[in-house]
Image (cartoon, rainbow, N blue to C red; front, side, top):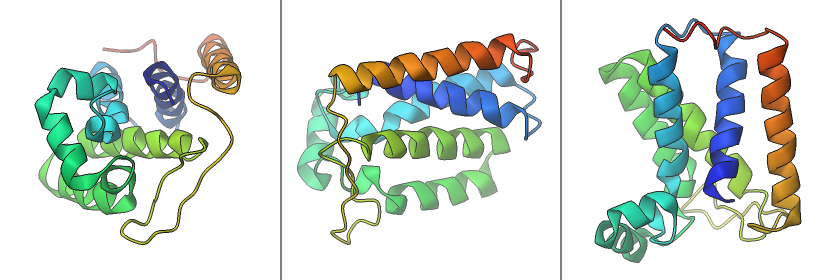
Length: 160
């Protein structure tokens, strides 16, 4: 999926989470969510984050490949547990939600993901990156965000 679809989906997930968890610093939470939703694509020099990291991203791709380690629970779970123990919960929750939402969307593409890497089991779907179905998905997610914000079911506007 494209960066803007990942970003919108993680934002929607974040809005839903506000109803269930007392996130005090919402500005920090949504900033971290935006960062962490792009993190799995660190293994692609063509991605938004990969372009910023240049050679480092190419090196990661050479070592790990694309949509393998960084698109798996083997990447997410140890970092989430570490963040839970050694940092504020907001970092751990934002990391878990951002990276997991990324995996969910990438699992909907024909390339798919290998969530239990190094096992070879691949989850894939039919939504081609940048094509009409992804654009429709983005419109749907955006509509849900607008509905969520307009119905007042969230504490988003109490951002500070």
